Each structure stands twice: as structure tokens, then as C-alpha cells.
Image (cartoon, rainbow, N blue to C red; front, top):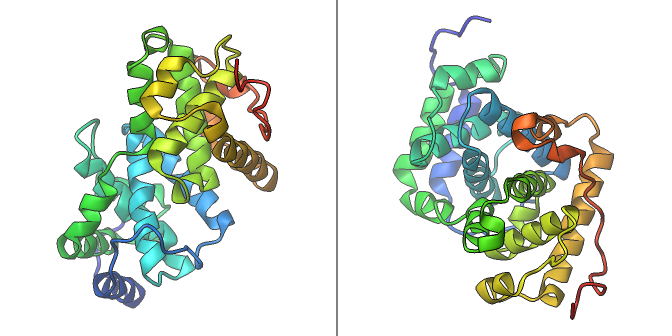
Length: 275
């Protein structure tokens, strides 16, 4: 499909950009009352598909949805403009991250099936990045995937375990799709994701002492987040069986087919506490 020729941004785009300009985008604590779970899950699915097709670093998906969360939590964005805002956030994330390639505006328009123009994305991106420096600083902090990498790299037994690493990234992307990253600290959620990955891989020691010391979290402390995490993943899968991008990504040989590993709902971690 041919790329559209650039045109002036439309009235809805301009209204959204003005709203983003006139609001304080610094707080992560404002509830996303305007964004229902179904929209969030579908947007993450599309975002990760874009990341995968255009070979961006997987961190860009987490970074982009961090931007998106901040914008929607503090500004009135109509449902019809979610995808365009997500596209602008993907663009900013790919440019700001120092790992991997960035993505062109033309590619984002193409990925959206021409639902908006190049000038729409450019205008929204410019409004956010130029007028909200604090947003860029806040959203640029450590993400769930960053903490997972730190936890794995700090443990000699797990550092070279590619299967556990793929499992952790897989579960982290499922967690992103379920909306967990909007409600828990990245360090806490990252530790919970890694715990679930170790359970799924049937490690004899599911939470090594070194990880407990590094994170400052014992299994009992992880239990509330782990229960919510695994429950949310199961709920999203049940409610949206057609969202298969994440599973498809991790059903490949290069990621050791980890999508075939069941992610159980873990509501009680008593059997591992004290072991």
C-alpha cells in the first residue's frame, strides 16, 4: 500500500495536541478512567507488532506505552485518536532509546493502514517533546524490562540462561498487555515477572538468595504482585483470544518457543516460602 502524501493535521489532532500542551503530564498516579482495558490490550498488541515488524529493540514497546500512559492519564484523548497517539509515542521511544534502530513516520503511517497522516504524527510528537520536557524525563526512567535485565545479569547462575531470559521477556510483554505496568513500580513488577519465569522454567530454587538480597524482596513480599500478574495475564487471554502478537513472537526458534510454556495462575506462594 502506498504511503499517503503529507497533509495538514486535522482538527481532532490539533485539539488533542492542545490538550496535551495545556495539562501537567508529570504524574503517574492519575487513574486512566478514559482508557478501558480492551483498548489498552489491543494498543499494546499493535505496538509490539510494529516493534517486531520493523525490528526495533523490544524495550521501545515498554517505553512507548510509558509515554502513552502519561499522556492519557492526564489529558483528554478521544478513543479514535488512541492509535495515532500510540504511533507518536513509538516514534519518540525509538528515537530517544539509544539501543536499536528508530522508525520513520512513513513506516508508522503504513503500519496503521493509513489511518492518519505523517503530519498528524509529527505535530503530536512535536507538541509532546518540545513542550513537556518533564514528561520525557519521567518516562525515560528504568522500565520493567531494565530491572529484569539487571536482576538476570547480576546472578551468575542465570546470566547465561537464555531460556529464562526469553521467558522473562515474554511474561513482561504479557504483563504490559494486561496493564500491570500502570499500577506497580517497575522494580517490583520486574522481580515478580522474573519469579514467574523461574517457576515456569521449573527451577529447583525459584527465588535464589542472591535475588532476594538484590531486590530486597522475599517471596512473601512478591505474592500480591505475582497473584495479580498471573491473574491479569489469564484474564486478558480469555477476554481477547485474537490478540496473538506476543505469543507469536515467542513461538519462534530464536526465542526457544517459550510461548508454549504455560503461565499458571499463582495465588498462593506458600509452597515456596521458607524453602
